[in-house]
Image (cartoon, rainbow, N blue to C red; front, side, top):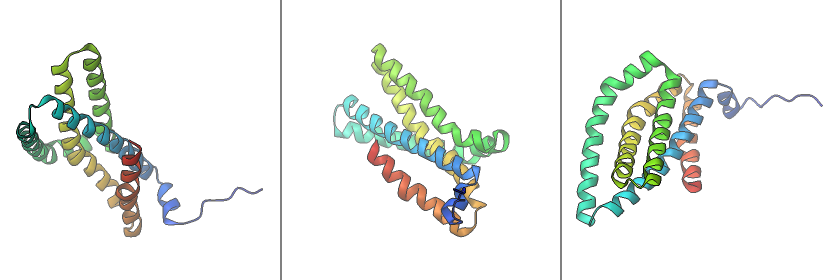
Length: 171
């Protein structure tokens, strides 16, 4: 038979754009990393800290560090990343950093180095929070801003309403 073209629906029209496929792919990779890092981080903190008060104090300190680094990253670093490196490296920065940190976590764990293992997990969490919010979210906004409103709404709904729950359930 004849080759049928994809229907001209917002989904197919939007998915034909390479930048949108990049955003969805990078977001899926980021979300998968997010769940893995988050689960590893909270398990490591719970195992490392002596009690609930110590856990709460540590989490408050990490939150404060993330807030300060986010401010610095969103005002200085994200502009540099996208102006100097471009959209593709900016969107792939977080998954690449988290993969490198994951390898260091795995290596330290297999080598029996608990302090380095814990430090790498904490650094992964900080990286996920800061780079994810300041650089990854900025890149997604840059790409989706150029879309017509109905497609922009569709892509945002797909990312947060479909990818997040599906990947959260799988991981």
